[in-house]
Length: 379
Ligand SMILES: Cc1cc2nc3c(=O)[nH]c(=O)nc-3n(C[C@H](O)[C@H](O)[C@H](O)COP(=O)(O)OP(=O)(O)OC[C@H]3O[C@@H](n4cnc5c(N)ncnc54)[C@H](O)[C@@H]3O)c2cc1C
Image 1 (cartoon, helix red, strand yellow):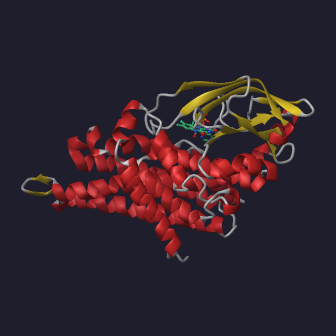
Image 2 (image 1 turned 90 degrees about the vertical axis):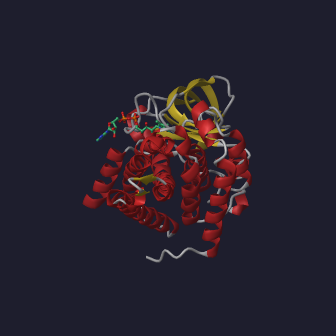
Image 3 (image 1 turned 120 degrees about the vertical axis):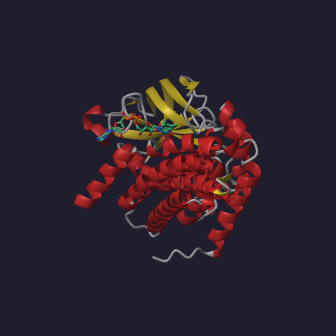
């Protein structure tokens, strides 16, 4: 496989790196500590075109490929994973599905402002009783002719309070099981739509995670995405691509922690020499760099297959599985290399360690990735 980047891909990577260093690094510790949503930073990400990177220019997007997207995701994630999760949800889970499966009216009304970053979106699949087993949707969508009535609760919704547009999954016909699930575009503020309290989290604390409650929310029929019963296929298709984005988030977190650990190892002295002169530290750096390179190759392979329109289910799941474990291992070792300083806020790596964990949980846990991979292997 040829992984030579094009000039355009390199320019996107460079722009994301500069943006992250100048606009996201200042205040990242405070936003994490105070659990502040990065409103201003997300607005600027929209202006820079980072929220609709892969959407065609016709609908207000950047018309870029997945490789450019994962390179930018990794750069943003190196500095602030709370910002990159907003970027990931908007690009992969909301815009991509709307562009692929939405009607022209839905695209004009919702995709254009989402791709331009004028508004942000949320993807609402998980429920209190339906996480890994997303087929067990309890939220219902009753067909009332020209509209649906939505009732139920969604859990753990990223951008839950800040999104203006929510893609909500609900069961229309229980008898048909997952073939009876539909996806709807639901605007914030509709009567009966209530946003629950913000979750207090281990990591990505700047991101906005909420439960959402729907009581007799009236949604016009034209807001259903795809044919009747297409919702579950849409969710699985969208998550397939989303995994490549989360894998690149994990990669970026690992790269960020590694860069800090490498630098620190050349500055800190113990027993009269820089700690990088101790072989135990050199071996840690070696293991970290090797796992990061392997993660990067897996992420790029999945992105390339996606861009070529080929099946990338196994490769995307492998990338997420491996890169998320790498993020856990590398951030832990980055703290170890920093010694006591790694355990406190100002050296950043403790936040990265906390942020890394979510990449093993959302958009399919590591156990679910193994199910996806083994299913593809045994097909
Ligand atoms: C911060 C955060 C943000 C999130 N954002 C969103 C969002 O924007 N939209 C959204 O829809 N969801 C979101 N989620 C939900 C997330 O996708 C789910 O938490 C995840 O899919 C796991 O579901 P669960 O929490 O119900 O765990 P469960 O499904 O109950 O799993 C519990 C444990 O059992 C394991 N397990 C389950 N089934 C199997 C099996 N068949 N074989 C082996 N092991 C299994 C799991 O791997 C896990 O270890 C978010 C979650 C968090 C924490």
